[in-house]
Amino acid sequence: MANKNTKVDIDYTTGPVGKEGRKSTLSMFMVMLGFTFFSASMWAGQTLANGLDFKGFIFALLLGGAILGAYTGTLGFIGAESGLTLDMLARRSFGSKGSWLPSAMISFTQIGWFGVGLAMFAIPIAKELLGLEVTPDHMPLVGYGLVLLAGVMMTASAYFGIKSLTIISYIAVPLVAVLGTVAMILAVQRGDSTLIEQFAKGTKDLGVIAGAGLVIGSFVSGGTATPNFARFAKNGKVGAVVTVVAFFLGNSLMFFFGAVSGIYAGGNDIFEVMLNLGLFWSAVIVLGLNIWTTNDNALYTSGLGLSNIFGLSKRTMVLIGGLIGTIAAVWLYWNFCGWLNVLNCTLPPIGIILILSYFMNRKKYLDGSMEIKTVDWFAVGGVVLGAVVANLVHWGVASINGMAVATVIYLLGQLTAKTRCAK
Image (cartoon, rainbow, N blue to C red; front, side, top):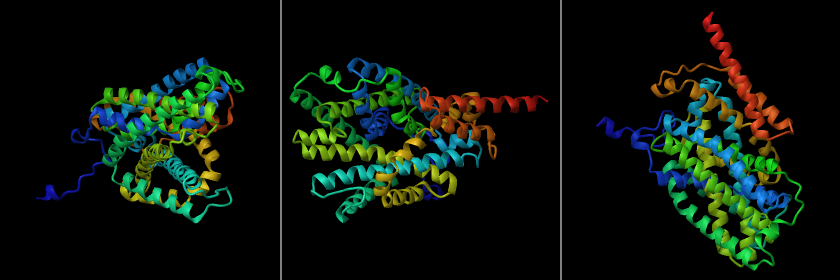
């Protein structure tokens, strides 16, 4: 009887996902694809279309997608094989208290994006549906009401965990993909020139490598949280394949949505393209569901991270994170996007250290014998120095620069530890 009354943690916050918690490949594909439906990728798509011709755009998308896929796919494999969250992996690589750094960084960033996402939904709706004037200095009361409504709904779905995220993804992914693609086709058909001709316009001052850097940077920070979702896959191979395919398709779709909106309508995203095509309610649906899928994943990730730091349940921390993000949403939207982009550069060094630690100690991770230190200072130092380099060095790709520095520092630490043990 005691076992029947024991509460089951369906999100496996503090331990590996068991066989009973693993989900179908289709469910994992939907969750991971919905995760990539990220409006910031549409903004990057506009920049890419303005700076490259169509051939360069495709090459940049393929190159950046391949690098991003390798990074997230590896994390997807690790998450699925070990069944561990990003934060549980961090406890093994950074130490029990050292893991508070990556947990805090990713939680802070994801709550920030959650708040920005709420405002990205509420502000356009307030303008287009209600005809309200919204500026950085003025947000009507009704606009705040929309933010509150969206915040409550998205927090509620994230509160119920992976089951809720799966249901939302099954609804959102087909609708966003189909409606957004139809809108792109209609925009091209109503334009006065072909897609290739439209791509030929603009400044064309961006190289393919720089364009690939934009593709990588658009989602490499969110992709660092891949283990939180891929751990529910059947096995490591499925986790890796689903992650790579879903991320490549989803990210590419968002870039095309952004590119077409920029070159045909001059709008910020596919929402404005659909408005110009007279597809108002379709635009509202696509905007809302696109933001909902990403926001749910962001809040879920922050809940896991804060739970690792404060020792409270994931659900409690999701509510707290949702409350903070909702209250600060409008301010975050107008003031914090730049800072969030700076913070994005700090997360890839975390991911590369998780990868290195796992494959250097794979057997110990899987049999549960991995020693958990209090703090691994080389792992912490790798993230700090990697983040500094990623933000201050303006050569190459910021996220890759940060990962390279973190790799050197972490491996140096492992070599030092082995030398001490040998003595």
